[in-house]
Image (tube, rainbow, N blue to C red):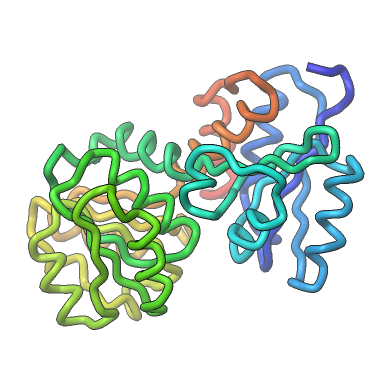
Length: 278
C-alpha cells in the first residue's frame, strides 16, 4: 500500500449516527494504517457533486448505504461480482479516477449467520421481507445454499418482482404479496425469515412468535438494541439475531478490498459493540 493516509467515507442519507466510522477507524488503528473515515450525509441533489469528488481523488474509496446503493452503482465504471448481478453497491474503490463498485453485503450476511450457527441447510425454504439493496444481497446469499425455494415480499411489489427476476435461474424464486395472511402462510413453511426492511414489530406484517419453532428469525436492524423482532422471536423459543454482525462482516470485507489486508475482527467487533451498546 501507499504510505499516503487512507481517505474513506460513508455516503447515504440520514446516517449521522451510523457506527460505520467506528468499524473502519478501529480497523485502521488495529492494522497500523493511517487514515480517516467520515460520514457524508447527502441529499439526492448532492450525489453528482460527490461523484465528482470521488473521481478527483478526494477519497480512495467509500461505503454506500441507503438510499443510494442502486444510484451509486449506476455511477460506477465497472461493477464486480455480486454488484453486477444485483445492480447495487456498498463499496466503491477509486482507481485512477475510475469507480469500481462491489457489494460485500451478501458475503457479510453469510459470515454473520454462519458465526451464529444459523446458516440454513441445503434444501431449506426461506422468506425475505424487503426488496432494497440489503434485501437483494440477502436473497443472493441465500440462493447459494441452495434453497428449496425463496419467497420475497415487499411493500413495493414491483421492486420485489424485479429482484426475483434478477435472481431468475438461481432456483425456485417468487414473490409473495405484502399481506399479513399471505406472509404468515409462507412463513409457516419457512426455515428462515429475514426482515430486511425498516419495519419493527408493530408494523411488520409478520409476528415472529407465530412462526414454526424451528424457524430462524433474522432482523437486519441493529438499533435500538435489543431489536424488538429479535427479542420477540427469542422469547418464543426461536433462534434469532439482529444485523450488527452482518454490519461488522461487510465492513471488514470492504476494508480488505481497499487495503488488501484483513483487519483483526475481534478488536473491531469490541469497538463496535462499545459504540452501539454505549
